[in-house]
Length: 177
Image (tube, rainbow, N blue to C red; front, top):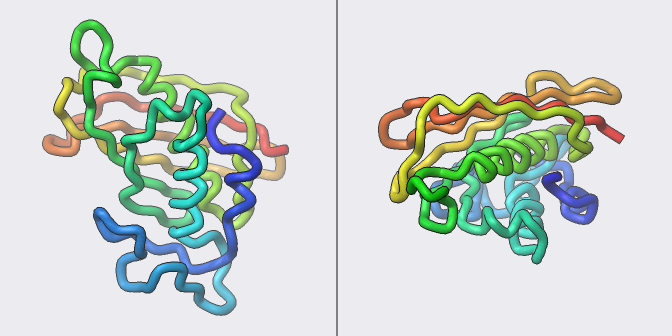
């Protein structure tokens, strides 16, 4: 799951930088700015890869309202306001959508490494600690823990943006082909 090879191919070497909230430009830099000799994809390329994925007609379209907040090598932060379309019958963030967030945002963190390989899922687990209600904003923070020759390991925390309270924590293992 996650990002297609076509989307991953849009990544180019450049300067990783946090993104200004509500902007497609890196904080402290110009759109598409590249520092000579720097390694890894640009924040703008990551944004484009995620846009390509989320605007598809496939399953990932359920995350169209998710927004990229910041990116650093091996770490990506996104946010999503829980709306009715994201909720279960109890009016809280659906557990299946939580799993999709873990999958997609951890894959984005893998794309935002020098190797820029999305890989394929081998194992994923999620611990649900509290509910996120309709109207609440959720931060999704994915961190690559280790990236080897064939396997990658990531952790993802979903937290309430207003309170910082942990909503869910996921672990994602991917085979890098």
